Length: 480
Image (cartoon, rainbow, N blue to C red):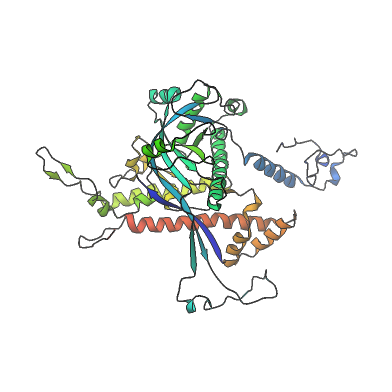
């Protein structure tokens, strides 16, 4: 295969302790795998084998490795209960399910390319067979798609009890979104779902930890966050929700404890028209951002206007919807709002050493900053970019750039298709546990990983521009 790209797809929808510095660099040997200090009795700085810059880079890398799995906001340990508020310290609050929203899955897209036999399989000079011999002389598409089906179910819910009351008393939104990751059974798709949940928690845990530290929280302040099994954690949740309001990603509050919960199948189906969760399910609680994405906005505005529900006047007469804002106002909202903030959200992710790897139209959520009605952000009448906040979501395929495992065989194949031979060398060095790889290889692979995110976002932006700013003539007919 030439390349394999994972894309998120909405299927259905109803609405390492670090050694301290010493004054003598001879006492520190970076080649020691345990990072222990090695005593040098001669204590002579003149024969140092490791210069200051090398030592600084190494410690900086160790600090990053230590932080990459941070969870200072305790999303992996904070547990919510279902139903009425219960008097147990194990739970920070209670959640009441409101509606079943829909399900999501992913799609694997593989582009195939064939090469003439070569003695050196790793050679970058392999000749491509043209035309493709297996596809009717190149007249048929060279791409295959594999759909996962539904692997994530989405529910809207509300925080109730003590915590919910505190949020409403402060004028904050007590609604949340629950994503049910089906994983854990023998099905490969369900196993994918389970690994997606783990990666989602790791990614958001790191981003929220760094967001917490960026808001001047020190180690003493975060001690109370990592033990969220008391009523004092209510204030932590409130603080977290305030910080997430303007963040570049959809935040996570915690998880729902399902181990001791029994769902009567008939009652659950009657309430939500879907089957109850399996015993392998994992429920993750997200901040409420609504369900409007770039996919929602990527429809010609004249068509969306024609689909608005009719309104009646004082005497029962039908009233036409208001006219659309001017093209200049709509273009400003799209370019300076949606596009610019999408790029800023992705840049934020890359600045924090992560890549998304599954950006699509449903991965960019449009939220409103100054109202709890999140539908306003995707309204055809929205024209003020300052009222908008674009958030990245769906981190199930995300990975850390500090973890070399992201450079796998498929990554190398994609990189070689763009003439980046160093990615292959990086993979060989990794597989051989070679710690003396050229730093340029690492830089190239890192940049290529980020470029793949930008490439995917570029397609989203093109689709957005060609639809949201389109102005079909009145004679244009559309079929659905």
